[in-house]
Image (tube, rainbow, N blue to C red):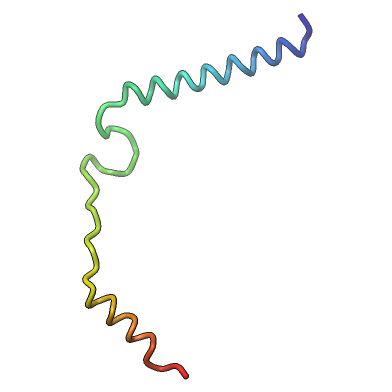
Length: 66
């Protein structure tokens, strides 16, 4: 077996080990105990902006041009 094939086999084995480790960690992660930034709770969904506020913002931009 040539040195090139040995290097290819080592790189492939390292890649498979990395993917296996990441898959295992994702599979066994329970809840939000990791550092994902959610602080253990659901993130609040932003509310919709009322249509009146959208119109007021557009009118404010159109006021001074020429």
